[in-house]
Image 1: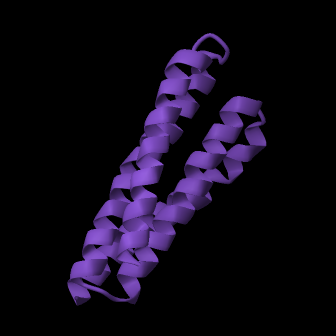
Image 2: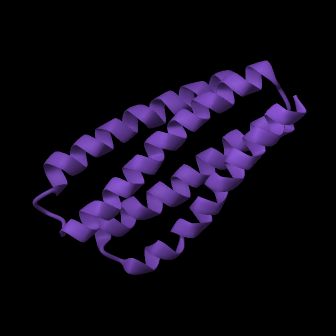
Length: 122
């Protein structure tokens, strides 16, 4: 799993940079400042947690176990739910999509806890 998490983290980081550039250049004149801020928050959390996936890959190779693998899956789910819901909200303006965002946030927090636990136990 360490290789899969590393590749996924690297790809998500590249996509995060691309999304940031898209927001800065293509969306700046199309979205309200509030919605652009929502989009940028999604990018920021995607980039941070893409790096988290790289940390999971490293930890999985050094301290393999169920908790480190779970951390990777939680980060992946968190990125999709948290950043994905913010991207969808900002592009559509449908505020109800914001109800999904906290689920992603919980997954991201749980991912960090699982990573810490996996390293502690390893």
